Image 1 (cartoon, rainbow, N blue to C red):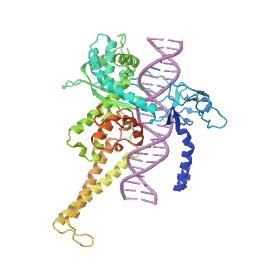
Image 2 (spheres, chains in turn yellow, purple, brown):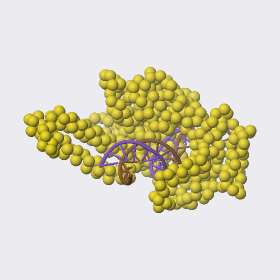
Image 3 (cartoon, rainbow, N blue to C red):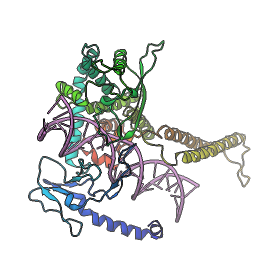
Image 4 (tube, rainbow, N blue to C red):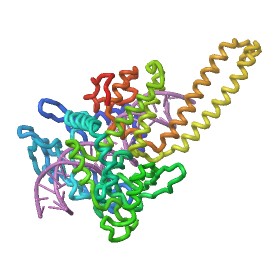
Length: 465
DNA sequence: AGTCCCACTTAGAATTGTGACA
DNA sequence: TGTCACAATTCTAAGTGGGACT
C-alpha cells in the first residue's frame, strides 16, 4: 500500500481521492425538516484490537465487526430508508423517534451495554442549539454563584459531616474546575473525579510560616490523564479534608489509602443540591463557567493594560489570545503528550537560531565598517551604510521571531489548547474580542470552528459573558 | 436508594492535508 | 519541487447527567 502510494502521480492520487469522495458523498448529508444537514460520523468502527486509555482491563481484546443487522436506523416516517451498503445484509430495525437527534445506533461490541451513535455534525442546528443553551446556562450561573459560594463557606462549618463533605467537594468543583466524578465499574480503567477522590490522591502539605494551606492533588482523571497540582485552599477546606482522610463518616474505622475521601455523598447528591439553586445546574456547568469567565477576564486585562490595543500587530494579538487560552487549558487540565519528534525539531530550531545569531553578528561588523565607508561587496564596491542597516534590521527581526517561536513551542509542548476552544470557552467572547480589536476571526478559529460557531458570529463587539 | 440505560458532550491520539521554506 | 512541521480532520474512548426501573 505504502509503495503504491509513492508510485502514484499527482493526477492519479487526485483521481483516487475524487472517486472516494464521490462514493462517500451520499452518506455525508441528510434532511432534517426543511434543512440539509451534514452528518458527523457515518461509519461503524472497523474490527481491531481494543486499546482503551491508560490501564484498561479490556486492553488487547478483539473488537469484532458490527453487522447491519445490529444497527437501528432512526429517521422520519416519510423518509426513504437508506440502502444497506453491505450486500446480502439488511438493517436490524427502522424507527421514527422524534425525541432524539441520532440517525443510527448499535451496541458497542467491547462494552455491550454501551451504545454507539451516528449524530449530526458539529455545524448542525441541533448542535448549535445545544451549544448556545450550554453557554447561556453557564452565563446564568453568574447570577447564583455568589450565593452558592456563601453557602458552601457556611457549609464547611456545619455540624453535619455529610454537609461538610458536600461543601468541600463543591469548593473543589468551583475553585479547581474538577469534574464531578461518578462511580466506575470494575471493567473500566481506574480513574477518579472530585467525588470519587481517594485518600491516596491528596497530600496535606505542612502549613508554613506564610500560613498557606496547600494540598497536593495527584490522580488519574478522564482518559487517564494525570492531574498533579499543589493548590492553596481555604483553611477550613484543608482541615475538613484532612479529617475526612482519617476516618470513615460514621467514625467507625480508620481510612485506608484506597478509600473514598468523600464517603458520605456522591456526584448525584451534588447535582441534586445544585438544582435547588438554579434549574439545570450541574457540576459540569462550573467548568464551562470558569473556562469562559477566565478567558474573558484575561483578555480584558491584556487589552486594558495597553492603549490603542487595536493597533498592535495581529500576530501579537494572536499570541496574547493564545496565552489566555493556555491558562484556561491549564485550569481544565487539558494535556497532550509531547509531540513525536519534539526534541529533534527543537534541536533543529536551535541550530537555525545559532546560525542566525552568527549572521547578525557579522552584519553588525559590516554595519560598523560601512558607517566608516570601509565595507565592500564581493566585487569590491563600497556598500552604503543604510543598505547594511536594512539587512541587519531584518535579520534581527527574524531572530526575535524565531526566539519567540522556540519559547512558545517549548511552553506548549504538553498543553492542549484545542479542547477548551472547542468545548469550554464561549465563542462569543472570542468573536467580540476580534471585532473590538480588529483581529480577523479566521486567525483564531479554523474552518471547522467557524462553521461550528456560526450561531455566534453576529454577536456585538461589546458582548460580555 | 441504588442501579441501569440512554443520549449526549468532552477528550487526546492518529491520520491526513497544507503551506512555508530551502 | 520535495521536505518537513504544523494544522486540520477523523476516530473512538470516556466522561456527564437525567430518568426509568427495581
